[in-house]
Image 1 (cartoon, helix red, strand yellow):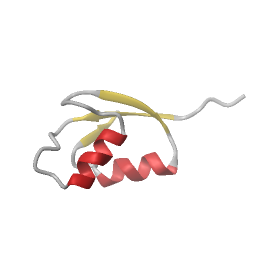
Image 2 (cartoon, one colour):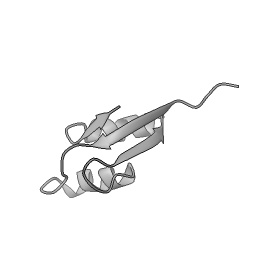
Image 3 (cartoon, one colour):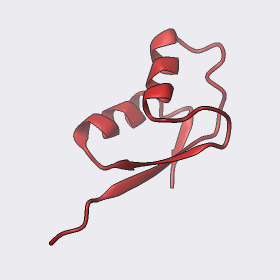
Image 4 (cartoon, helix red, strand yellow):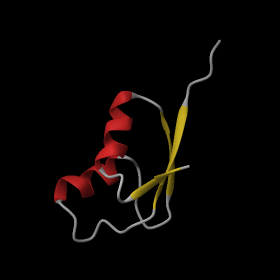
Length: 60
């Protein structure tokens, strides 16, 4: 059985002052406040969300 690939994403910049859709994307990734981390399944949808807000997050 193969393991599920995961991404660990950390919010490194505040979404205050960003577009509403970018704030919603950050919330959709499960990130609430600065330096919060979320472990997500590595899917094309999640990668697209990370790419959209790449200036706010860091992939660990």
